[in-house]
Length: 476
Image (cartoon, rainbow, N blue to C red; front, side, top):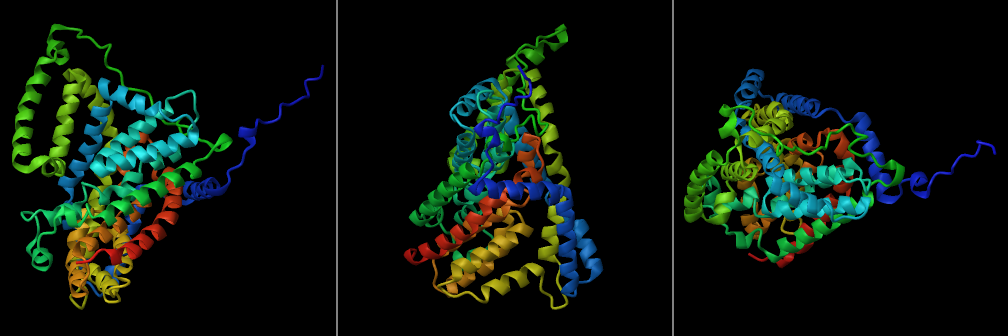
């Protein structure tokens, strides 16, 4: 019998991507070839902003000074974001959470179903807290990647885990703009004089906002499903060279008497008991949302919960040491973004006006009551690419956006939701917010951006349409 017979490829192996999968595949090919490392991206953005400042007639020494002084202004936030990744990783790698994530990871029964499931879980969790969606999404992807019964594209699943930040977070309970406007103690006087306090019932809890959220999420899950590769186009975590193994410290035992306290539950329990007292005071005075909307409190609670769930100091520290490398991109790149924000908002040109003022006046000056939502939406999306900070950017935009809404007799709460919906869009292709997730996954921005750009193609026109079509139903 001849050995010349060669088995024909199975249907799944020979299947070529079609439809959205083909589009995402092409974008991914291009991004893998042409998309630079995230640090190159931020360096180029810095140069572009510097050149823009020079074009406005700004003093070169003022530009250099602003670059240096602005560099360190996000250090507290940088530490907060690093701790988002660390504390989330610590909690999720504890025994109880590992079992929960494993159960969630066992739900999908197909490759595309797994990607859609990650998208749904991530966006649902982002409604509660954007930081939770990053960590939970990343660790859910890792758990799914460990399954041997289905083969899932690690890049597509990773991009799905990012949809909480790129689609829905700003329409949820951790919306920086909505929370700022609802909190009179935090509201700057320059904004308060224009709008006063705007309660959450007039922003994220508007029925129009909830409808918009549900439609955006449904479309994002659909796009995630149909753009996920199948068959021989799939690249698994192993194909990408990523280690997705679990952290297991349960078998460790003290090797000498001095290590006894490291493996004992007593010290963690006492520390957590003290922390519980602080959390009780915060909840009593600020309520649940007021407590967890503070990123310091969020990280504090997660850190203490992680310590409690690990049950001993050795297991806790082992998990922390494995989490720290995931923060490298955050630590080195966030200061550069701080400088970019400073160059946009603090360096006046020859006319005494900053770049952010030029941009805002350009868009706001052409707005009327009919096209106001779309104009402000486009403006917010563009500025969001340069200043990737929901709360900080709202401080820049609010005086112009709210004053224009007031002059046009538009609903100020809806103006905030216009900002929120549009503000999330640039996150889809901006590596800034990807960094904690990339650290957890062990991927690069170029691995995800092709799938994210496919999402952006659908999300941008959809969001602009919803902002326009829902606006007439929101009356002041």
